[in-house]
Image 1: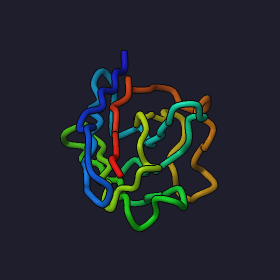
Image 2: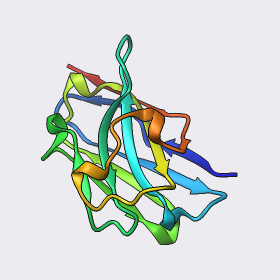
Image 3: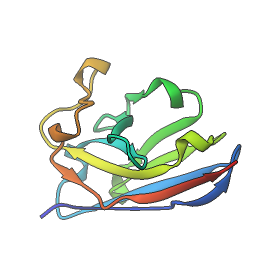
Image 4: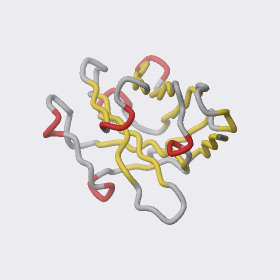
Length: 130
């Protein structure tokens, strides 16, 4: 029974930073590749970032590259998304997702389709004021 719980969202001014966390329980976290998605009102859930099982590979959607950093601490069963230089268009509910089947050795390994992930958190709201 795998559970993922996001935290760290909140209200921040444009240009500011937030650090999101996703804590996993009930499974072998180190065997999961992990991704972050976000969903803004009226929009589809979109891929943001991903990280391989051991943290050695990271991947980003183009609009956040250079501003966001995904990392993980397998000893703490937690994946993070450090968000810097936030923009109003970054405002969304942010979700973490676990992939129990594939590790992410290359960009082509990372599913952008949310239906390809095995476990999801409940989401955490990020609001960016302009």
